[in-house]
Length: 394
Image (cartoon, rainbow, N blue to C red; front, side):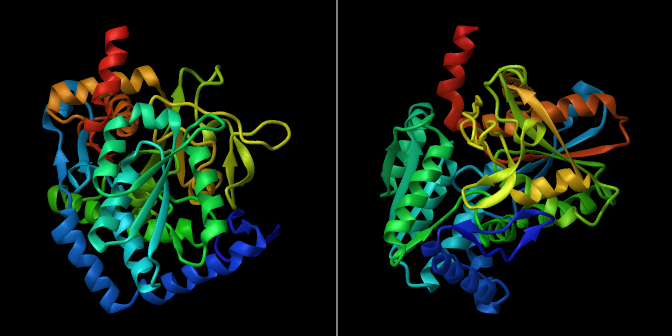
């Protein structure tokens, strides 16, 4: 194993991979560098963002929720209204256009909540590319609707039955596939994690969220927001919102991690809150790990957040103080899921419900003159059956 990093965020990021993956990552890196500023690529990406994904997504003033809480104005960046129901499609459309230019005939991906899997299967169906999705067996159970959607779109869904049978294990399996089949296979990584160039590449495709939000809030309020709030598992929706505001230091950025059943239990995935720097899946970031450096089992009510690592740029934001990272429990997220549904008629994904829950707390501490943008990264259709079971237990 050797390290040949190109992109770092402070001490985080890099490329810690077996030698036989170096050339694979170099190929992706070179393609990304070549095409990201290419006018033809940009034109094609913009076409699909507008006519297929449905961008720009609205920035919605949550008037009912704002009035009920009596504090800061709450705006929701409506990524839940994108085709396939989440922010994930921004990235998969971008990456499938790269795969097409590289002449790849086979795409693999990992998924937790299934939204990235659905978005990958969608992009592959659109461009007639063979698609294989690795998903933890437990996540397959929790997200049965998304499993069906992936299969309907023509993807093969491969349940991963080892470990905790969740997202980390799905990533492990996908990387093993890539090592075995790298000549004809493109790995469509779903979050701003992994070895270089993936964190930078995913951020590039997701940065459209923050670019739109900035234009929209300036049009609506004539000024920038005071706070940005987004959930963080791997962290692609958050980095997408934060990126365009990075140099606007008056705007506070808050990432919300899953506290699960409590930070005093082993059942959480609060990587930036309780983890320490380490190496996972080919990159350096904060990792929830044991004394031997092995990743710990993690848990969240939201299948898309139960990952023991986090994007390297978020790790840098934490250490540099540019962003603050907080936690929300399962119970608080579930309450926010119901609250937003009943107050605004918007059913959020359980992942996004973590951001909504913290936004609700924060708004009540602020004055009516202040503004919060919450990234509503996905819609809750996929979670309704699971939430019904959980509420019945209560």
